[in-house]
Amino acid sequence: MRLLLPAALTLVLLALVLPATPAMAGPWRITSDHWSQADEDGFGRFVTAIGDSGCSSSESCLRSPANPWAGSEDRAFLDVDVDCAKLPYLLRAYYAWKKGLPFSYVDAVSGSGDMRFSKSANVPVSRTAILDHGGGIDGAKAMRELLDTVFTAGYRTDAGQTRGVPSDFYSPAIQPGSIRPGTVIYDTNGHVGIVYRVDGAGRISYMDAHPDYTITRSVYGAQFGQSPRGLGGGLKNWRPLQLVGARLESGTLVGGHIVFARNDQISDFSLVQYQGTEPNPSGDVAGARFSYNGAPLGFYEYVRVAVSGGKSDFNPVYELESTMRTLCNDLDDRRQAVDLAVRDGITAKPHPSGIPANIYLSNDNAWESYATPARDARLRAAFVQFHRDLADMIQMWVRRDPRIVYDGQFLKTDLLKAYDAQSQRCTTTFLSSDKHPVALTFDDVAHRLFALSFDPYNCAELRWGNDSPACPDQTGKRRWYAMEQTARNEIGRDEQGMATEIAGPQDVDIRGLIAAMPERVPFVQPMPG
Image 1 (cartoon, rainbow, N blue to C red):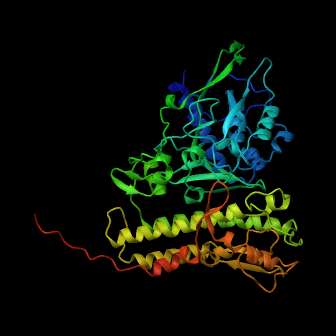
Image 2: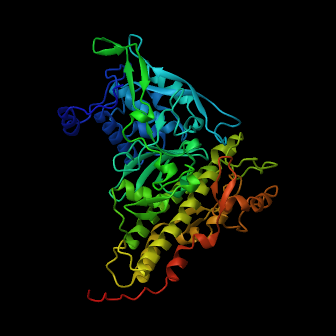
Image 3: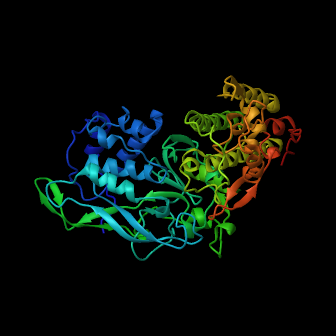
């Protein structure tokens, strides 16, 4: 099988210096039998441009100037809404359409129970290949059929699968270039993101869509959890494919069938994210241990160091400011979700007679569209990880670990100053039930993080963790709020949506952690040898 081939140097240079020319609306014509490295790079730039644009929905993304083909489609196609599972497919297939590339996707999987949250892997059983049978492909129709088909159960496949219908993705090595714009991130609790930027320090920025069809952005970390190999969570790349047996008609490839690369044919295939870098006879993620150049690391630290090519030095002040900016963006995304529930009158409705058995999955349209349990759990997990990472950096500084590159003299003072400044800059403002603005700093939110209500029927005050007298109590909403406290303490869930890790306010008290910093270990001048 021919896999991804390097593009000719002239094509790479032309792609870099020539402006993109929007294609006119027309059929999807396949002009290449595979995705070259230049195609993969171009797809990465396309995803980066969409991610950097700040667009907030699939419709606004497709209409954005970041899309070089914006304006080439009829309005009916652009009015497309996608959730998290569909967003990566929308971007990948849309790029394939506009660049004349082949595409195929898993259209059915088998599994037990609710295939989105089953304890065992789903098995791909059939595929749809988007092929030209003469006269071109109706791109808009093919895209809509694709988006009507894919959902999160299609991501839940064994990363080590070697037989049967291949999955759409493979598990990549954790290294520079393998984790890149276009890489997909799958959370086995039923959420998907797509990477749009990887910086020089190994931070992985991703965007994700939600049941309300909004698109948000954040930085990869503990909010996605670690997955066993069998469920295929974590970082995933698109599986290389090739169109074979097609005939060339007027520059267009017609007919043929698509063949996929096996795992052992992909140069950067690796199960390291599930098995670790150290000997692990069980192969289970629970026994996975990670190190880089002999230094033991936690999983998320390992990913960052490995993706950056070994950059393991940290400036605690910079890391604090960078993480707070990311979390501030997450808080603003949450504010928009809460405001939407208020705007659409969900908070004013009487509370249903119960809450869903699985709060992360419901057939109730209002709950599905407006509740934020999964979003809030990821937010809490990110805050807890922030606390843990900062605690580790503080201990490294105390021990005079050479990985800390702080040049000042008073780290506690500088961290407190940076924290307070960022906290004030990150002020979330919502409109109270009696219609006056309420402002919360980052530190305010941190102290009430485990009181934030994910229930869309609660008033704005409860959504932001404040049981204010201004908040009306319709049909015992406060009773339901109290019953939901256990769920508000969850930061980790298993594949069935059950809590696996519980935290509390002490685990996210960032300012308190800084204020309680111990004294530094005295420097001891080494004796002459």
